[in-house]
Length: 236
Image 1: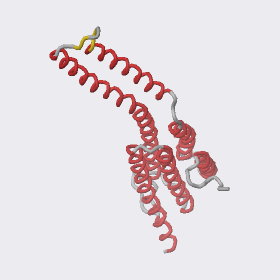
Image 2: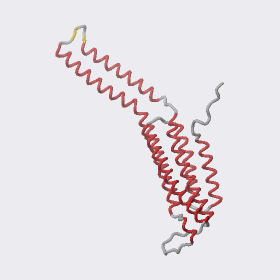
Image 3: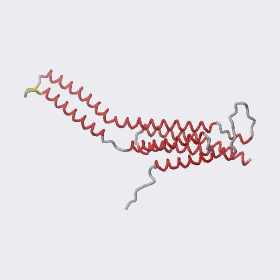
Image 4: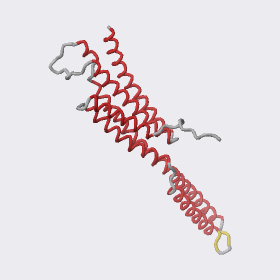
């Protein structure tokens, strides 16, 4: 008997659990740092967005009912139009027939547009909700990047500060750990975005997810470059 596949899809609960552990590690290492609050916000967003991604993957019963009602209305309108062409057992005159056919064509076009609108309404609603969630993740990625922006690895060289230089009190080890936490948070933001691509097959949503993954990968690469510089300076 074939066993159910358990490693083919992202699990939102595992991503949230990883974020919770990361948040605890940051609080223990840097209890007063703003990064701890950002990670706590990311944990809360993970719970909300995981529920949103799961809701978007579930089919809705309201839309098929709406489509059925619309089809019934269309059938009634077409029946009424047919009665207009053939009334009291007598066929309409050619002029009336042409007028009726023209009205029927216009009606079909209008009905076709209404059907297309209703059929795509659910898809557009799901897409809008997914894009709103992805916009939130994109903003969090930039907030995380702001927290590592002033963490200059050259601080280990004891460079001379100016009056407007940011306060740097971290040791080499603390600075490395801080940057590693930022890199982990960026990677997990990308995985939260990937939840929506895993749950949906909408091309627009998938492209938006790819954009966020490229963003977090690029920001994470900059962080790891700083970590590499610190490592090289320690070896030197």
